[in-house]
Image (cartoon, rainbow, N blue to C red; front, side, top):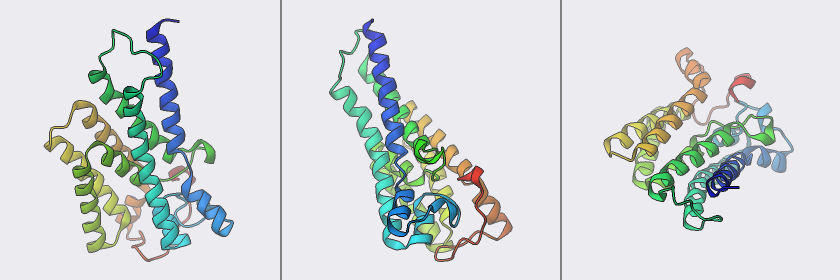
Length: 228
């Protein structure tokens, strides 16, 4: 096997690990451990921190949020570690400084996909907001904190978690362009932002209809499996 083929196989394995890392079903596991329930059968049906908060309480909700953020951080750190400690020799045709950002992008996208389409939950999951924040933290902590600030401001003023999330990811896309991040990171945040907004399409429909629950209110909605 040629060095380049072996190197590519290692990349594929890395992306699979990033996906599996993102697919760790934190919210589902807490629901099962704490109350013996399937969190997907309650509230919005999402396994993310917001639905866990509404269903299980503040402690479990915060736990899910922190763990899901760390999944995003870990996926990016894993990609960077791969280049710092290669398991196989890097082929002479490969320029690490060129390839590293693209590997980071693919690792991040794999983790996002894993969180929302977990292999352990029949490809259901959360909306990837917290995991996306973790990816931002690993790429540029200043943009991540600014994004979190936008979310907190919208939440404080209007108390809609979904609207805060959509505004935050939109702000993140704007900020990566304003700060002239490398092209791979621009594409990662843009693609991730579009994906997160798409995952919130049912929330946006409820916002327009005036039926979206505010923070502190129970989600009096039926679970739509296509949006979980």
